[in-house]
Image 1 (cartoon, rainbow, N blue to C red):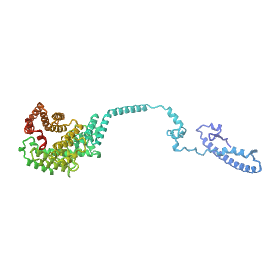
Image 2: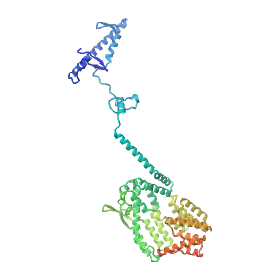
Image 3: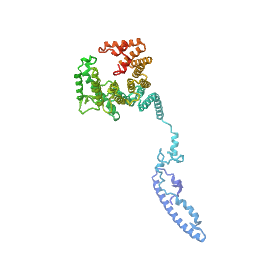
Image 4: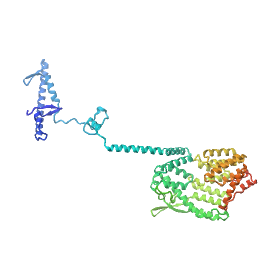
Length: 547
């Protein structure tokens, strides 16, 4: 052979002299090919010799002699096999290295096998693992870590600031599930106030506030809130559809009110005998078949930074057909006037002109009929209709109206209406108990205290009657909702209790209103009680039971 071969790390290498050739020597490739060919001849030779040795060994084992002569020397067959086996099992230079499965490759270099001695899930080879431990962190990593810490601190700070608002919001949800809408409304209002009316953070709370407010008849307020919190694009989202419809209904109500005012506005605060009732009522009746144009819902909302003062412009759910026109990029919709509101305004006209209670009742019942089974606009007519049924002592009809308030268990109207009915029946204890229940729900109310004062007055307990009437008078004043009925009850109870100075002071204040309201005068029942010609029982048990 031209050169001697030796074992080197599982393969063969040139001898030392040949191995010193430079790497760029072009003869190296031909030398390796010659060596590989010689190696193949050597392997074939050893295989043939191995075969002969095994055959001789089998013959000798039968004759008791396992020695064999090979190349002039005598060796046993077993020794020859042991010498040849390492050469037989050695891989040839042409056989490729063992391939590493892809799932066993290092995730860093992708060439070496993972060091699973550190664990089956260890992802790196030992060399990469050692290098990563020594690799210094870049300044970018420190900058990223600092930014992360700042963000965490900011988030924690915001959470602390929002914790109260979130607590209010959760309480509001709990109250709403219990049908305690008054408490829910207060909690939602506190939540938005705590957040500083940030639109991006209060929209979800606003939805609850608007729904409750609309149910209570605060149509303009609800529409204004929607305008300030939601822009036109947001109102087109499916989850805001209910809000858009509320704005539509409010727009129709606003347009109807404006049209009604043009008919009867000039006759407000005038003598009933000078009002052309039949003419005005006919014009209101004709509105039931009339239409008007308003701006489409989403065209009316402004961006979040506006001041909330927008024109009314929405189509009601009662919108019929109608057509749409475009003017200066604003879509106009033709809609019908709101029938519920028209009927209610006819009722008010009947009251202005002193029409019989049956006439008044008919208009309120028509308003209820126009509202449908859903009673979406019951806040417009329900209270006055309840009073009509109460004065008629129609308990079944009264209860049918009070059922409309069941959505809010904290609503006081059903309680003091039922207290009023109990008082008219002479059941003063039940009337007082119902009023006390109302006062537990809201101690700032005035009507329940007024009803309780009347019940105590009829029982002859003048001290409690005066105390209750005084509370009603003060609560009404604090709420800027001091009614004539509250004032009359206060005057009568103060006179009954001997507090004549208080009675005369309140009477003088009422008399001063005559300068502003020429048609106003203190009722004869109140004046008669002060003069001793009329009794409390005559005032609060006979007729409609009220002043």
